[in-house]
Image 1 (tube, helix red, strand yellow):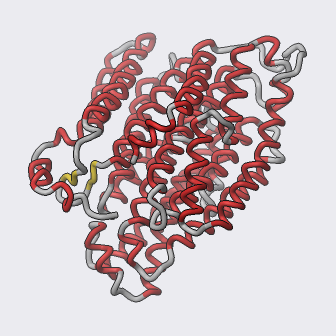
Image 2 (tube, rainbow, N blue to C red; image 1 turned 45 degrees about the vertical axis):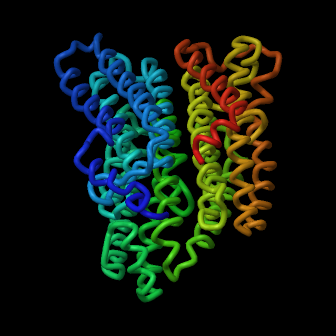
Image 3 (cartoon, rainbow, N blue to C red; image 1 turned 180 degrees about the vertical axis):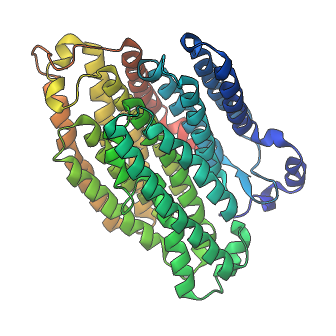
Length: 478
């Protein structure tokens, strides 16, 4: 990806001295610090004020991003951070997903002894996710990776129960291993490329020994693929989705993937495109294995959270099709960004249904949902069929454009495999939809959380509404 400095000209120097270029990120950081201080003085029954601060920061992030959307691309703080359409789209997708997650939080964390800390951890992880997407320097990317990871380890074990603690431990150990591996990759690439900024790194690794570049690229990608939940670093996803609280599972399986996928795209389209390693083929193979393994594992799941976990793994595989096409199609970047936005809203919507029915654990527990909770059942159908890629949902538009980009880039075999996997995924989604739409008494879930149910309806409506606005959205992310 070309450096933003060449297109921004004198604006770069001005923005280097103007921290307001990072106003969306600053809003989230200030809200996290203020929320932590505020929560330490508030009584337990009034911790909801911290949630209000977090929601206001997310709304402010969206507004601030919309205001600067059409400004020229800029690099800030030297060449270490890029403010472009990818960063702005990530800001909006992350903030929108966090807003939905905050709407789910009252039923899960309200009244907890560490409620305010929960909101702070969510905000910090959101900042780290956005920083990963905007990073234009390997050192900043590594720092953003840590900021997007450490709060999530704490969130996974927030409930302090057996399953949650086990999931948090597995998540942490795998994250620590692959985080160190990623830092090793950063070190190798810096050593052979002579720079950490993407523009200079691209020039350096083009002249470096191929074996050393390959080691550095694979080690670097290991950490980012872990964050995205792709093969071979996907083992943590089903354990965290099942063991952590449902609202945490909704956040962890959705938001970090946004920043990770954009970060991988920026590397593949930028510095790694000039190296001796065929990163397009590498990402294409990872995409193929990820979508196939995710779908095959989901076929045999009866636990709804594990089913959604493997579904998110397969979704990453589809997204990586667009990443693999980064250097071969002009449609690659807008298609990936559109898909990420649709996926974030739709996946949180599916988890919102799970949060709304805390006693429903297996697919059979949803039997008769349509009869007792018609709107909730409808939201479930919209979100699950949206994840398949059914029109007119926004995921359908994102998946269609990603596949088109893959064809443009000469990845016909990968697109065919993705289409086959998409059709096959309909099976396990229908295994959930079929009992939910039966006319029977629902006895598996007596408790319904109304806020989570409303959030599910809002997410489903947003998935449909954004799908109808595909044309304008694609124009914006171009």
